Amino acid sequence: MIRLAWRYLWSSPLTTALNLLLLTLGLAAVTFVLRASAQVEAGLRRDLAGIDLVVGAKGSPMQIMLAGVFHLDAPTGNIPLATLELLKQQPLVAQAVPLSLGDSFRGFRIAGTTPDYLDLYQAKIAQGALWRGAMQAVLGAEVARASGLKVGDRFAGSHGLAEGGGAHGDHQFQVVGILADSGSVLDRLVLTDLSSVWEVHEAHHAGEAHEPDDDAHREITLALVRYRSPLAAVMLPRWVNAQEGLQSAAPALETARLMRLVGAGTEVLRGFGIVLLVAAGLSVWVAMLHAVRARQGDLAMLRMLGAPARRVAALIALEALLLAALAAVLGLAGGHALVALLERLLAERQSLRLGSLGWSEAEWLVPLLAGGLALLAAAWPAWRAYRLDVTTLLQAPR
Image (tube, rainbow, N blue to C red; front, side, top):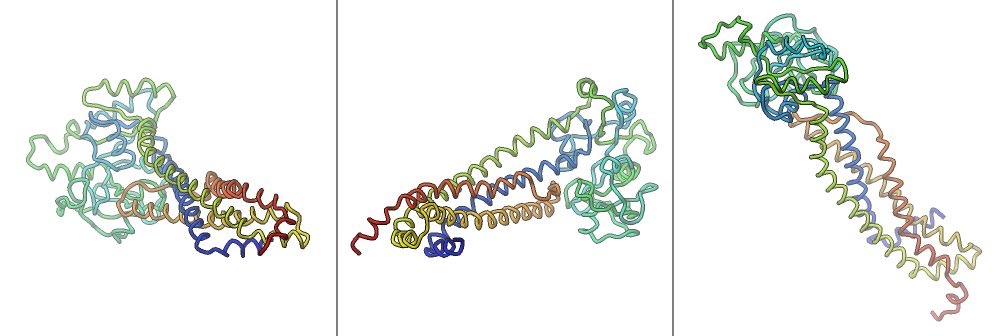
């Protein structure tokens, strides 16, 4: 039965190839949407790393979240270093981690922070060790691969968060460690001590009136906060926003807003895939009807040789299922290839890394969708084959 159905399927190669192409494109689009959505959500959850609140200068909460958590945007400004101590003194705050941004290295951001920032992501050192003083840096795995720097090498950062800013040639960092590849935002960061950022910043702004070592004039860019209790989610953002010059951003809320914005594009692509699948289903239906009409003599001969009517009908359904199975394999492969291409493009642009994902549970729907569509398209042609009048067909003039 399978061999005969396969031969029947390819007896009209152009029609079969067209139906296969339509089914494959539709299933590939559905696979891409399902897999890309799942991987984006996994990547966002991984980069959030349990951060409950981001505190920065007055401005857009979305911009603060993108700058402080995902490092995809410029920050809204700086806040006094005293803000960090003020947050740590709050009974609702379990942890407050500072971030100082402003410079970059070959497009990768240089972030001044404390070892607590690495603990948020459970980062591990692959080579060397953590910084122990000023002007020492630890490279993310992606930064090390792209730059070719090794432990002991020196480099100079450039002013600004975009590639091409003025270089700080007089203040070079020494690489003391390289992080293991974690798939998180740490992979594309250069991490150093807060004092390193202050030293470079003060040298860049030499000639200003304040004393370089005066902590009252020290600034950080952002503070990443973890709550001590659920009550903090209600009270702490309101308290932060009431402070002069401070703005809070809840990553969970802002990420949900971001996903709603991205969701419009995925809905369009999903709709495109569904339209292709409907067109493919109609095309298969027409092809199966034509095949039953063209093969009436063959089907009548099968009945004369002892094949029951249900087996003749099953032959038509099996032909459609073989087409669907081949399209499901090609569609899954095409969807995975598109996601891999998207991940590569994002990596080249130093953007959001997609979360690692094996076989998504939602992807099991793709073969089921293909099989269901094939059976639906073959139902009427199979019924026509089941109802063939063998005696009339054999008596018809040739």
